[in-house]
Image (cartoon, rainbow, N blue to C red; front, side):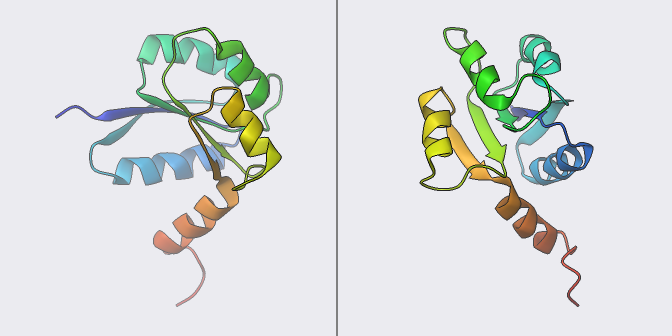
Length: 124
């Protein structure tokens, strides 16, 4: 069975680890790489051939929006924005979609749901 190959781009080691945990729990999904910045990710997209890329927008150096701009006109897998600055209906979300993102998800909501799912909510 072919797995959905995912590349995670986020400057936070904690977020990369949590994202990897969530993705790897899904049947048929596998994290093939993790990058802490867009420069590192550029070569990983070519070398690892992921089917999908998750991208944070707020990163040092080249931010996620600039990275989306750099990918325009270049063959690449779908880019899924996972950022604390995007929310349903926001202008930033609309801008990311306009620049080529496939979808946008609110990182804070995903992390809250994930911590509850993983038993980290602190409630007993």
